[in-house]
Amino acid sequence: MRTIIISAFPGMGKSYSVEHLPQYKMIDFDSPVSPWIKTNEGRIPNPSFEQEYIEALNKLKSQGSY
Image (tube, rainbow, N blue to C red):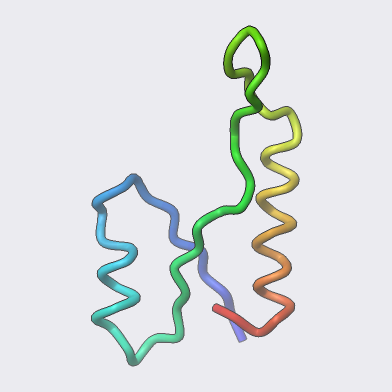
């Protein structure tokens, strides 16, 4: 089975689609990974964000979620 990932800015209809298109098996994925790390000096980019994000998506995929 094919998995499609839809990524879009807030307010573009991702959550709406999950709620109003039950004929499709979808989940609304809120990433547990932050693109930022808080330091004493402020926020800095998380250097491992991309890899951690992909790993979180792969966990969903391996659980059979779409």
